[in-house]
Each structure stands twice: as C-alpha cells, then as structure tokens.
Image (tube, rainbow, N blue to C red; front, side):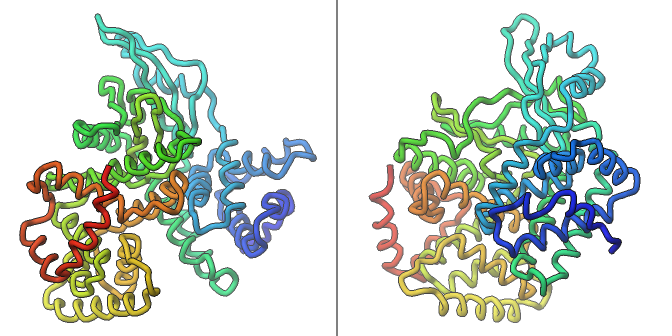
Length: 485
C-alpha cells in the first residue's frame, strides 16, 4: 500500500476518538489509510484540495465530516457501526455525533432536482416545498412539502430524493467497501477481535446501499406494507403519493413523532407497552400472517422508528430494505422458537432441518450435523438459563458455518431480531425478552379467536409439540398467561 500517512497526521485517530479503547485505534487508522490510498485520482484530489482550504486549527471532527462528504459508502458504514451494540459505547457515541453533523447537499440543489423530475405536476397538485432540507441520509435527502388534489384540503407530504452525486460514485464506493472488508478481515493477527463483525457490517452496508438506490422497489414495498398493516391498531407506515413518485423520488405522507427510544421517558409502563408494539409491528404481524408470503422490515434501527405519543402509534419508516418469508419458512421459525423455549432437542433439530435448503440425498448427513450442533448447544447451556429465539438465531449461524444452507431471507430476519433486541433494551431495559413478548402475542391472538387462529402453524404442529414436551407446554403457558394485558 502506498504511504498515506498524511490522512492520520491530518486527522489523528487519538484526537478523533479520545475515549475509545486503544485496540480500536489501529483498526480505524488502517481503514482510513486503505480507503484513501484506493480512492480514484479525481475524488482524492478533490478531498485533498478541500482539506487544504480549511483553517489550520480546524478540529479533527470537522475535518472528518468534510473528508467523507459525498462518500455514501463510508457514511453508511459509520451509521451501521454506530448501532452495533457489540462495539464500545464511546465509539458508537462518536459515530452518532459524526452522523448528526453530516450535510453535503443544499436545499437549492434538491429543489432543482425535484422541479426537474416532476415539472408541471408540481402545479397540477399545487405542491409547496419547505425552504430547507428536513433530514439527510447517506444517499438521499428528505424534504417536506404540502399538496392537494383538486377540490380537496391540503395535505402534508415528504419527498425522499436521491442525492445528485450518488449515481456517479456508487460503483466505486461499492467496490471500495468490498475491498475494505476483505482487507480488514484478513488482518486477523492485528485485530481479530473485530474481524467477523467488520465483515458482516461491510456486507450489510453494501446491501443497504443497493436497495436504497432502488426507489421503484421501495415504492412497491411501501404499498405492500400498507396492505399488510391496514387492519393493525397502533401501527402505521407512510402512505405512498403515487402521482408524485419517479425513479429518483419517493413521495409519501409526512409522519410525525419522536424517536421511539425517546418516547415517554418518565413512564416505564408506557415504555413496556411500546416494546410490545415493536414486537407486534416488526415481528408478529409478518410472522403470523395468513398470506403465502409476508413482507418484513429488514432495517429496524431506532432511527427508522418513530412514536406518535398523542395517538399512541408506532410509525415504521424507510422500507428501502425489506424482504419476504414464505408461510413454510415462518412455520418452521415459530416451531424453532417454541422448541427452544421448551428445551426440546429433537424438536429444535427438526425445525432447523425444516428451515434448511436440502440437496438430494443429504437428509441423513444434514440431520447428523444438526443434531451434533443442537446437543452441543444444550450441553453447554448455563444452568437455569432458558434458551430463546436469539439463541435459536445464533444456532442457525453455527449451522451455516458447518455448511447447512438456509434461504437468504432467513438471515436478514435474524439480523432484524438482533437489531430489534437492541432497540427493546433501550426502550424497556433488560427485563424485556423477545421470546416472552412474542409468545404472549401469539397466545393473545389464539385466545381472541377462541382457539381458531393458528397461522402459519398447522393442527399437526400443535399435536407434535404436545407429544414432544408433554406437560411442559402447559407449565410454560401458565407462566406466560398472567402477563397477558
């Protein structure tokens, strides 16, 4: 690698991350040097020129914000790292502050883009743009507006608009991220403690960016989500304003609320109810859907979740990254969660096998490997610890490392559970468990339907659970019933 020590001399890692443990600093410094030694000539020259124009006493944080402006790949990587609970709190806090300070487009630029793409439609629907940018992401900006149909009252909306420079640098940023992930993961002796996390984060960033640029897909997903949540009380998604959408603009209803982790700060009981709404909206509704395939939000970090306090409603934003689960996959996921909670080794084995993508003639070999993993897991389980759905997801990770193949959508759902677990912890503390809330949600639906509701489970599944666990089912259910609202 060429000598790019200028970047760490200009922006010393020690000054940028003064409270972060020293083991992270070599990693951050190496990442800086790698990225800016691999950047294309024109972009690198522009970055150097921008830094030279700044006053000599410019703070390291301000220099970094300027340095990574118009670099959606690095900006998105910082956002993903900021919400990874396995990183140190001080590093996450520094990354959050960095994200909050980003601004690399002007309102004038974005207004010109909107006018250029919508033209006379702005007059037809009497669109009035707000003068400033409402919010910026790594690849898009949000601008508020009002509009109305002929003869109707004015409504408030929000334009999500692709930033003008993103298409030109997207391909290079995607390649750069791939190379950065490979480079950092290969240096295991230097910082192997983070190698797997980094590889996963880089892969997630690439996936997020790919989906974030597909506005037509996001618009279709929003419509699908609206149908899925249309009869849900206390949960809503933005409504697409179809006449004002293009390939680079998504027009939707303006949603109000506070960040879900900030809602009802002084009311613990209300926050527990919010935790239940999160489970219902992000897990239970897709998981217990009666449809053949069910859409789920695959990026449920707190920044995408608002809470409308006056109306007691959870608002789920940003459907750029979403996936679908078939009824059969959801059936086996529910059985896996039940069998883990009840401690049935054979039941867990069968559920994992049901989730796997099996080739011809591999049934016995696959079952042997799964049984070995499951037995090892339960043998190592701490005394008194009740295994749950997050343990099940970790078990699927181990199975994948052993060569068991699963649908890609299943691993996105796994990511959702871990991300949501962090949000739940911030909302209601460590007393909240996804397993208990999810079981309560199922029991509530089942009892409310007088035992007729069971989607996507089949009658035979209930019989199988009873045979494998006997009185354990009644024992566990009796513990959960007092928690029902």
